Picture (cartoon, rainbow, N blue to C red):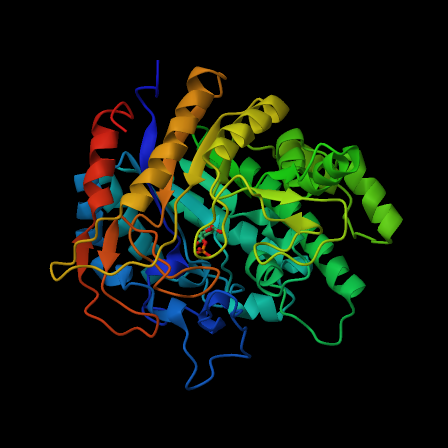
Length: 476
Ligand code: BG6
């Protein structure tokens, strides 16, 4: 058995983390263009517009806007069957509310997707990967219902334009991140909600829940429209799957973990089942949230269910029902360090078996094909004088995770349709804005402040992954 013949091996990136060219060819400012650089333990800041003297790494990316043909040739050399990227919304609608799209932006992605096809790579396209035009965020982001119409227009425009180039679409990247409602970055990047110091925590959560409802409607409308544009489209949701284990077999720990997992599942529950789960309706009632719904919303959500589920998977977490001192990893209530697994330098707990666990859980819950569209490890790396890095730890990480995907397919019967390594080329880290948190199999000579030649070089994992793909996963 092993991986099916048409398995989609490849790599994944997002527009704002690699394109750069933030103000070229008519592109408008996007929410990521005003995120400063941070570090492990130093949060990125959202500035009020572009402030002179600040470091904005996403404005530079790795200059892929100008180098994509050469970079794509390296992906082709690794034998990628698919390539996942996102469309920068503000290249197409610079402010988000224009009548007509920006033709230069549309042409860029046309050239890009044609290049992928010419190089034998199936494009996998995320419509919104932590991006929206800054102007729409200033209008309230997805908490403002009007933004649903702008998203629909953006999505319809690109789906129509690329209907013969792109088959696989994802509506919102890691849409469940915003369940970490106490952070500034996740509601901002998921939904364009700019922190307002005048809001109390309940008001913040009310806005986020409203945005989430509006995104469910937006996604369902786009799924329906996409299927009208091209019935062959396969349109999926994208969930950040960090499984939450109970710290012990104490029943209270088990139930605490179960309840926290709903913050992940609720998105799949709505996207796949097309209705709000009871536990969420009860929670809104209990906690006093009043979600504005327009007549017909529940029908739209029911009619726009997804064709497949896609996930990112990097780590697992463990929680205790006891009050414990705050953990430096992800800050879930009662989160504790899992003593059985190691963590990366950024505190992400490495757990390959957890990947099989989530694949099984998701398939048993939803009975839909699953695409692993992100998996990888961020590391500090210093190349030798030829730009070469023997990144054995990355190879070990990827190997151990791919082994678990194979088990999920072979033993468990989970229909996994593809696997794309996150940041197959070094890109700007989303969480920290660093360049030095590297995920790539291709090294990019650039530092956190944008210094460097931006020269690309192949790491050891480049050759390893090429052999994995050539053997369809047999040679790990
Ligand atoms: C996911 C995102 O959260 O993880 C990516 O979809 C991100 O955009 C990736 O880059 C790794 O996270 P980070 O913060 O290490 O870049």
